[in-house]
Amino acid sequence: MKSYRKELWFNLPTRRGFVNITPQVEACLQESRIQEGLILVSAMHITASVFINDDESGLHQDYERWLEQLAPHEPTSMYLHNQTGEDNADAHLKRQIMGREVVVAVTAGKLDFGPWEQIFYGEFDGKRKKRVLVKIIGE
Amino acid sequence: MKSYRKELWFNLPTRRGFVNITPQVEACLQESRIQEGLILVSAMHITASVFINDDESGLHQDYERWLEQLAPHEPTSMYLHNQTGEDNADAHLKRQIMGREVVVAVTAGKLDFGPWEQIFYGEFDGKRKKRVLVKIIGE
Amino acid sequence: MKSYRKELWFNLPTRRGFVNITPQVEACLQESRIQEGLILVSAMHITASVFINDDESGLHQDYERWLEQLAPHEPTSMYLHNQTGEDNADAHLKRQIMGREVVVAVTAGKLDFGPWEQIFYGEFDGKRKKRVLVKIIGE
Image (cartoon, each protein chain N blue to C red):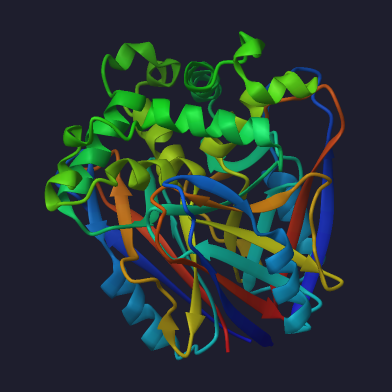
């Protein structure tokens, strides 16, 4: 069994945003030389997500509006977590909706994807350096 | 390390529905002859889910009603994604709640499940052919 | 390839609650002697979750309040599932928001975590014995 590990770093200029990280994950897979196995791509921060969906800007704006309805940022005082001095409680909630991680099959050295699957980094508390972990195991 | 891959195809006659795919996944596992490892079962389409829960029709109707409250199909015009000519923005949101994939342990050649765990395909934009990927790695 | 399996048992005195199970999962990893691979930690019951987030009691109270808003326990009669004699339909919904499982990278014999990641058991229908599965594969 082979294994491979890499960290991807992000620093979004905005509080929230979505970044298509499929090319970086594909580059990791190529570097690993693993042909058959599983890739784990996970947010190393608990106010961010890694998820798979469509690379369509209208949809991303729909996600942004929807997540704000389900777990609004303001008023920040409505969250007990924010009494610790943080203002990011909503980000911890949004990340549970969108998920921490994805596991993707590796087949014949490629991400084994359906027609529209793309991997995104979902930032809910940005303006600082944060990381995503790529771990691949297989042969 | 052994690996195994199979696609399961679905064509639901309705826009939304839940299908218990546990027997098909068990058949894949048997065919793979893998005794110890992990199975990934993932939707290859971004308007569908694979999830684990109870095979109880009342609960499935509760999920349907609940998901419609959280991410209504109509009015379709409220979603920017639908300006692309689609009417399935709600399906992309519902799938994030229910999840894209499950990872299940394989122990002694069986799905290592608790008493009521069953694997479902969750369709949110049906009436067309769509796929689920089963990938197994192990020994 | 090596594999390792263990069940962790819980019996929460309350209907709902969150338990930090990171130390138990770390003990499993040490016992497995696996250095590189993947850990699956999954709820074996369909009214419970395993998720990764922050060990901060204010945040846990925020989750509790938020999940009650999204999927209220009462009135129990609003759920069809509860016509089977259960009163836990809300728990099946809450668990979909919080997730069934996490997959964590194992690197150099450790859980490969960001600065604040901790693994939690999320109980939504407690006061009885329930289980979490830890499965590790790797070398």
